Length: 186
Image (cartoon, rainbow, N blue to C red; front, side, top):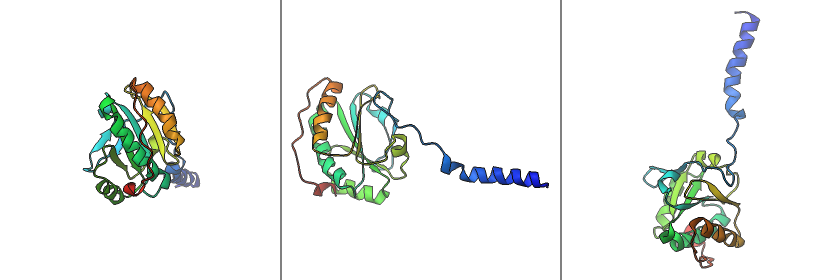
């Protein structure tokens, strides 16, 4: 084997080794874009897909159990689920990049929650949605397109989200009661 052949072989082998490190991430979905279909896996390990909720308006919020703002947001999202379920709203909380046991424990500690918890333990769904910080929320219309995006949590988020939810549902969902109970989400 000539020096040129060895150099070429080294570049091919080395290049394929380092290629994943330089792989381009998918673009972050924006308002008006179609939302990625896969949302994660449920408690039984079955895939949960956005397309299963095509007749609903869907709020997808990425969170982690260690994230204090996320724990503050979960009871608000649960209240939103209860207020909007009969009007065609589905709230899905995606546990992002946490061990499946942490996810399972969280679901078991919150049996009364009506919102849907799903797990994204490997982070593929978070990557597809462009999540780089949590909480990260998307409002998705019945057409599967994103109509609202919010990163972070504060008391003002619900004031921004409700008009968007009502516009997409074409109904009036009442504001969830303010809560300071973050223990249930821990």
